[in-house]
Amino acid sequence: MKKYKNTKDSRVSITELMLPSHSNFSGKVHGGHILNLMDQIAFACASKHSQHYCVTASVNKVDFLNPIEVGELVTLKASVNYTGKTSMVVGVRVESENITTGVKKHCNSSYFTMVAKGPKGENVDIPGLIIDSEQGIRRFSRSLKRKEQAIKRKSSFKASQFKIEEHLELLDNENVKLDLN
Image (cartoon, rainbow, N blue to C red; front, side, top):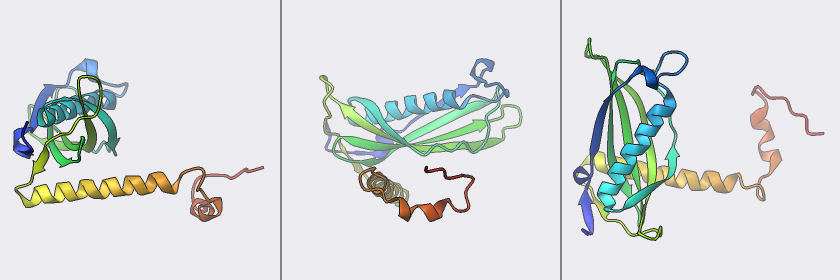
């Protein structure tokens, strides 16, 4: 296995026609179907990079920006943005295309943390990332920031360390009624 790999070596993309069986009650493509496709492409990209079976450890923020219509082509693109010792962050971009007009829409971007597993289910080391562009540095740095923020979020809301008085003011202008008795 190589010690470092270029992002180009593990990029993956798929295009799929959205069928009526993929739709929700409003006639748009079901978000769960898109999430399933995103997880599959993140797996393919991470496995290609690590040369190991990979599992999804977390998904960072999924925003559905535009609806996807039945009959549109959906293209998902994935690339490794960050590598740690055994985990990597795979960026996934989802675009839809109206077949008759050619109009494309950005529908979603998300970040999947994937962990490489050995034959007995143990975490295994992965190749590092060769960064060869400003965009690569931006993506790697953004992944580091998200990692820092996640650690901070976890620790600041631990039940044993949570101080209610520090958070009550935040609720003042929210659609909430406190009934602590």
